Amino acid sequence: MEGLLYLRGMVKEQDQVTRAARRAVLIDGLPVAVLGPVALALGSDPNQSATQETWWIAATAAFALAVAWVLLRAFRRSDEYLRKIQLESMAIAFAAVLVALQVATVLDATGVIQLHQLTQLILIGGVAIWLVIADLRTRLHQ
Image (tube, rainbow, N blue to C red; front, side, top):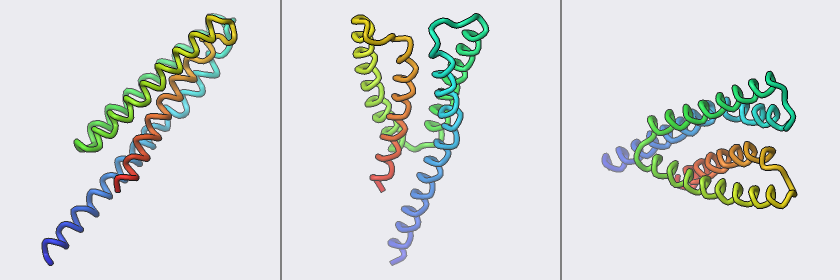
């Protein structure tokens, strides 16, 4: 009986750690969610002035640093199983980004769209895919 109570306590503690880690990733990911669309909006005009390009580059750099920060913090606070989920989710998102970039390149070559307009959107979509898959897999594991 005592062993069962101990196991229940361990499972409950692990659930709290998992929820806290997921919440922290969402809070840490807030700058990513804000900076991504800002960088996308700033880079949508193909005929930019030097000042507009500077703002676009700064927002894109801040977005990239925010993504790196979220990754670093997520990996530091997670255990081996959650790291495995994160890496598998990133692999799926990376594959989706590669396919989307290939399709966008073909569409750009045929003159249907401009690759410049879709690149950041594809990257933001890849980050969103990664976070959603990781969150769903973590929730379904419980």
